[in-house]
Amino acid sequence: MIFDFYDFSDEIIAKKKSYAEYLYVKANQFLDSGDKIDSRLAYNSFVELEKLTPSYKNASNLKRDAYI
Image 1 (cartoon, rainbow, N blue to C red):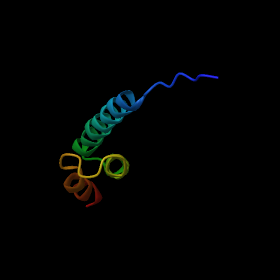
Image 2: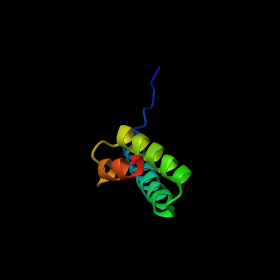
Image 3: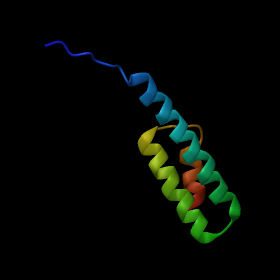
Image 4: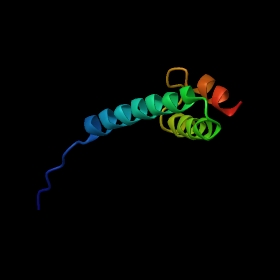
C-alpha cells in the first residue's frame, strides 16, 4: 500500500505568521484605545503572541505597557 504524503509545513508557517501579525495589530488597537478593559485585552493578546512567536517585534515592551 502506497501513501501520498503532503507537506503542510509552508502553509502552517504562513498561517502562523499571519495570525501573529493579526494579534499584534489587534493588541495595538486595544492598547491605543486607552480603555482599561481594552488594555487587559491587549495584554492577553500580547501574551498569546509571545507564546506563538517569542520576541515578535516589540510585543514584550507593549505587553508591559498594557499591564501598567
